[in-house]
Length: 263
Image (cartoon, rainbow, N blue to C red):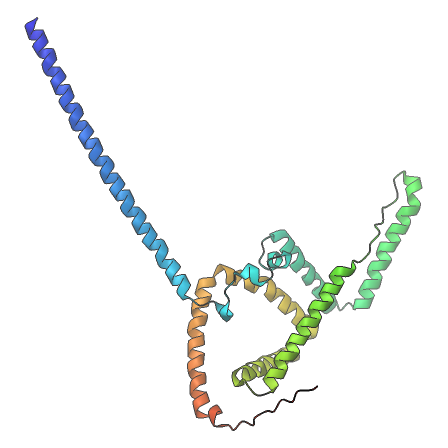
């Protein structure tokens, strides 16, 4: 009996000793795992802060500070241009493509197209209304359409505001105060004149429409790369412009313009 008690006591002591060793190993593993996780979190924070600092250093194109969606107004127009709703954007672009094909490739005229659409629609509605008694179906419900005045007035006021703003910009350029802006506008108008010789107004309008539906999406996807490249290109252009300005443009005499106030 004494030997059995001694053996049980020795086995109990060994088990308690093994349990203490296991607890110490577990505590060491947990502390090492927590330390490694804290190190990993610090490295992740440094990695995440690094590209954030790089992004802040990149100046946006045209001095833009707001997101691209807010630049386009942040409404339905911005959703269509940036393909937030792919079905609506594809429908708008497909409709514009069909109109361009009808007028340019098929050589449809606008008045002819409108008259043919009205003839076809009125004929279907007239036959359906008269045949509804024979086919035992209800007549077509023709909606009462009325154009609201407020959106039209807002559109007209917006167009008027943009026209006045464009006139003010042209007046400032023609006054001879900003040579850089003058050269940029002359170059833009020269490029538009070249495009006008290559295609007609409808094709030019369609090209601009397609560019508005493709370029902003691509720019939003590769925004950082395009902005960094544009920043480098702007620096080079400013260097060349400074050299040309010092050698040639600064030597051109400028006549002061007296602006008289009209009472």
